[in-house]
Amino acid sequence: MYNQTVPFPAIFQVNENIIGQVPLFLKRNGFEFKNILVASGVEQSFRYAMTILEVLDGNHFIVGSNDNATVEELRAYCLLNNVDLLIGVGGGTVLDVVKRASLLANVENLLVPTIISNDGIVSPIAVIKDEAGKTVSCPGKMPFGIVVDVDIIQKAPTKFLQAAAGDILSNISATNDWVLSAATTGEKINDLAYMLARSAAFGLVHHETKDIRNRNFLKQVVYCQINSGLAMALAGTSRPCSGSEHLISHAIDYHDLSTNTLHGFQVGSISIFCLYLQKRLDTKCINYAQELKIPLAFHQIDPQIEQQLETIFETSLKMRPGRYTVLDTCKDMKFTDIYYEYISFLERFKITDNSLEPTENYLEYKMYKKQHAAKYPYSQPPLET
Ligand SMILES: [Zn+2]
Image (tube, rainbow, N blue to C red):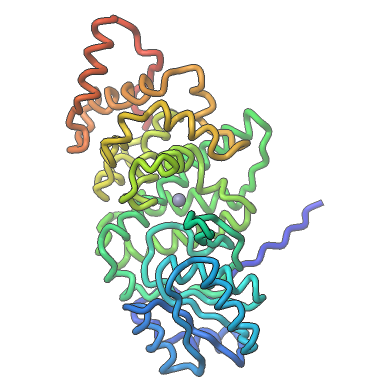
């Protein structure tokens, strides 16, 4: 029998100069709250929190870190003061603490992100640091409202916007993996979640301008992230937006091989490689990555990655047991062979990218292959159109 209940947000606002309109959005949607608490960081987000408190009655709370102690402090504050709405203003740290504390205190939350860099805004997941300082994904409360002021997020450094746009590419490779898994393992697919995740990505890939400083494109990036979040909520799993590319990315993070790279930038680059593995790489996706200045060769993200390709592959298979992806079809092959075959493929089709300057490892590998006259174990047909 079909019976599904998904808590979906009710307020979605993405526009210029709307931070002062939060009370209007609440009223317009028929929401009334008695005790509102606005949580923010101490720098820019503090100023934005004050802008909201100028137009709305409420108190203010400072979130200094995304650790358990801060979550507990905020939860206790909410319970003690009968807070019925928690508004989170800031980047990932503030929003994760707000989502987690509002679940524990059973309070509604509305999020006003000041930075966007991945698809985690609309999700019931909060990334919190445990006692040992390691980040863990915990359940959080799904926001009932999202207000994105484009004037604010546009001021964020370019690399955040680039990462936000890059993360979307993973929807294409992740949904391909989903279909592959359905055919191989019988995994169920939620059609609406599948369609939301894919249309979000293709809406961006086919957008006429891919300039992250262009307001229309930036708005589209935010819509896509919201759609990705809804797709995951609908599917009840991260499957629509997380496949082989996320497994490789998590393995790279697990071994601390690229500590200074933003998640969305990293998975965007790995998605291109995974699309190649899936035989689904087309010029639109390549152009999209190139226009965003995301390297096609993901070892260029950090030189350490190229030294550890086999380890990364082995770890990626263990990152999420039960998540079947195209990587499972590569188990009998040497990952280094597959990866350099991909680099040769890019070279062969003259897909130029300044990230493709031959590295010592690659040249050594080519020499080795020549000397041993071995055949590439993995052969790809030309680009599909
Ligand atoms: Zn992601």
